[in-house]
Image (cartoon, rainbow, N blue to C red; front, side, top):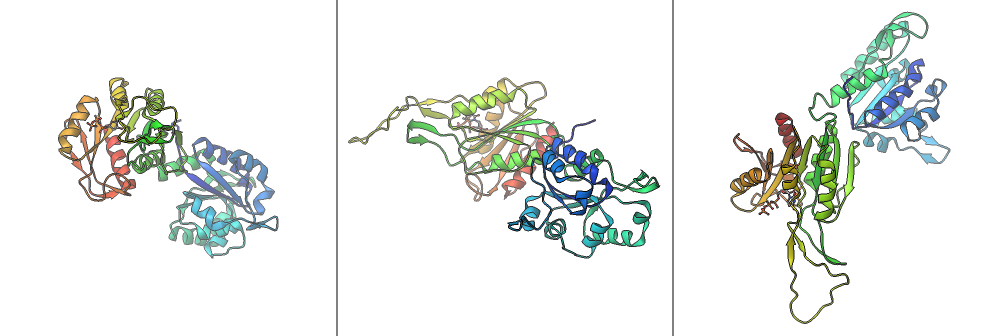
Length: 400
Ligand code: CTP
C-alpha cells in the first residue's frame, strides 16, 4: 500500500452508531498518516466506544459536553477554527437529521455549525434506516451545503442484514480524505529540507551581526510542503514565526555554522532541499568572550567567510535529489542568479529582487522569478508568500 501523509488537524466527530467501535482504528489510521486528531463524541457514542480508548489513541482528551464538569467551557468556536477538516464518522441517522435542521444540543453539533473548514461525513446505519426517505432527504440537505459524504458501503450489517449502510473502512476513509485534500502530489511521503530565517553571528555575548530576513517565506514553503504530504525538516534561524501544521519537524539554530551542521545532517536523506534562509556570508573572526566595553574612538571588527551551505549541498548532491537556492539581488538579478545556479550546482533558483515594492524581507507578499537550467525564466506576479510558496512547489513538482 502506498503510504499517504495527511498533515492536517482533524476534528473527528463520533456519533452513536454501532460503527463507533471503528472510530478506534480510524483515529489510529489518521494519526499514522501524520494527522493531529481531536475527538468530539456525542453522549450516545459512549455506549459503543469509550472516550478513554479514543483519548489514548489520539493523545488528546475527548470532549462531549459543551460545558464539562460544571465549570470547563469546551469552546466549540475555537475547536472548529482549530480544525483543517471536520470528519464525522460514524454519522448516525439522528446526528444527520439534527445537522440537516440546524439543531445544536451537543458539542459535536455546535462544532458543525461553527465549522468553516471542509466537512466530511461517513454515514453508518442499518439497512432500512439508511433506505428511509428522510435519511436521503437529510443527506441531500447536507450535500447541498457542501458537506462531502464518504460511503456508506454495501455489505453485512451489524443486524445481520445485508445491504447498504456499513461505514466505510477506516483505511479507506483516510485514503478518500487524502485524495480530496492532498490529491496526487509528488511530494507525498518525500523528505524535504527547508532552511528559513536569518542567522546571527556573535560579536560578543550581547551583540551580533544579522540581516532583515523574517523567515516568512521559508515557513510558508514548509507549511505548503507539509500540506502536500511531505515530511518536512525545517531548519530555522531566530525568527518570530511559528507553525502548528503537522508534518513539520523544526530545528532552531542561531549561527551559520549551526545551520550548516543541521542542514548537512539532513541533506543526504532529503529528496528536495530548499535553502531559503538568509545565511550570513561573514562572521566576526574572533567574537569577544566578555562584553566589549565602550572605548574612545572607533572599533574595528575582522570578519571571516562562513561556509556556503548551499554550495556544499550542491557539491554533494545525491542521485535524483533536487536542490533549490534563493538569490536576493539589488541589481543585475537575472545574471547573478544564473551565475549562482551554475556555481552552486542547483536545479532551480528563486530570485528575489529588492527593487520590487512589496517583495523581499518582512513583507507578507513576494515577487520572484524562477530560473532553472535551460528554460526561460518564469516571472511570477506579486503574490502573498503563501501563494508564492505554492507556485515554487508546483514548479518543484514539475521538475521531480
Ligand atoms: N547560502 C548558504 N550558505 C551561505 C550563504 C548563502 O547556503 N553561507 C545560500 C542561501 O540560503 C541562498 C543562496 O545561498 O539560497 C544565495 O545566497 P547569496 O548569499 O545570495 O549567494 P552568494 O553566492 O553568497 O552571492 P552574493 O552574496 O555575492 O550575492
